[in-house]
Image 1 (spheres, rainbow, N blue to C red):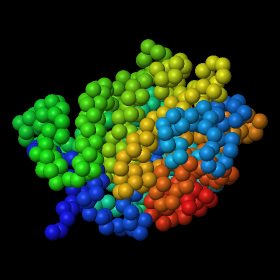
Image 2: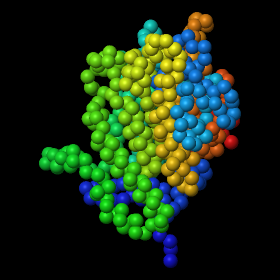
Image 3: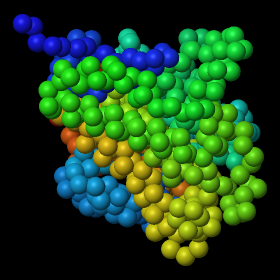
Image 4: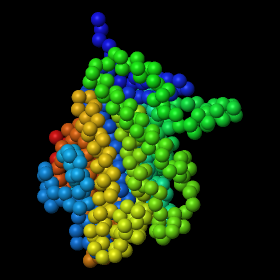
Length: 479
């Protein structure tokens, strides 16, 4: 008798058009790969971002982030310390230091910091900036790596080709044109790249992933659907019958794996439902300006909770194979989020990098980056503890974490060290997809951050040696 098998894309179906995607189970048929790199199962590609430079004004070294020793078992300074608090996470993370984006008119350089550096950082191409204008008139000039991978994967049957999320609701004081997303596409014949919007609402992202209701156009139908939506009934209740039928045919191992998966969905539903209503819709960018906050800083929209929710949602989307490509912008460039609620410093994150948080500003900037690393470590730990195709989810991921800038001399003033610099940049790479050598500190002196992206694109099977105007991989990052 033929063993009971189901497709990797199978889902639990229920009433009201609801559906719940399944995690990887032993009974699933092997996926037919589109590329040789997929032979062990699907690979995932994720780009994350922090809107801070790794060094501040006047710092003698890059903000207690870059390890002292190269190779494996690198030392964790203050900025990366949270990665060592979760067992095994550091062994999945490599640090690539010595990177630079030249502040000049070279094809992969940049003009003007903040908005200007985003284009080479994400697309490997110089930004466009009209003469005698500021950051707000900077535009990306190329296609970002996540979109290149999305096109190469050409997914069939998954809900999202690419899932773009953003944690910071709005950057009240910044008007940088390329500041609210990590995804860009340069269409044929276009003079600049267009920015693809990122979802800022955990509730909207969750609903779109795990609910499949069709509201239609009939007013009565819309009213009934909206009422049901507000009830926030668990999607698991709708698929209870199909869940029971499947569980009856599973092995003990698969049943435990499915129960854990459903338990995580239930927990995520509860958290999303309890989240502040300011994140209810994608229009939350239209909230009152944060400069009216009583704290006197740029404002805070519970980004601590939002970071956790967005990490949970990205983890679940990739676990369920709803997407294989994503981006998480934890904060926008020139991040004016208030540091007071999470760090106790009464200024914005951006101002910490400019020595406006009082004494010991270098250490305080390291603590600010450590706050981001706490969120990143949470995401990596969830992936590391999620079974996937005989290993864990992180084994099958290539995740790049980029910082807005580095630390070095200001243009035209080599004696002044500033956060507004493309020198001495660093990137983190997590996961083991495609032979990535995890747990290393690699000094890639003079390499471009796009070289890191190229390495990770190859790790997930996208055979290329070029991103925009940058060519080549980081030596030693892949086996």
